[in-house]
Amino acid sequence: MINLFISVLLSVATMLPGGPNDAKLVIENPGMLPHTVYVRVALPDDTENHNNGFVQTIQPGKKIIYHYPEGTVVFACDGKYWDDYHPKEKNIVTLQGGVIYKYVVADFKVR
Image (cartoon, rainbow, N blue to C red):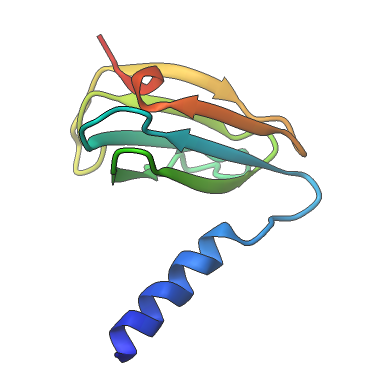
């Protein structure tokens, strides 16, 4: 029961509105099958260029929402981007503050 509460609390925390200059990134899966997305982000204040981002499987009919600061660059990857892996990447967008960016999982396919 405690684990469920913590899980729900963490889910709600990631969906809370960000600051006034934050952008909202929404990725939806309108398909019939689960789809895993590999997303790397370059944060504007990260001078050491760390590998920030997420890997998430999005269930059919569901969406995920993340908040990032203005100037964040979003990349789709064809696999993991950490531990010295160098996947193919596709630049998706540079986020502007106060904007909601809506995508579907197909937008994050890297060819």
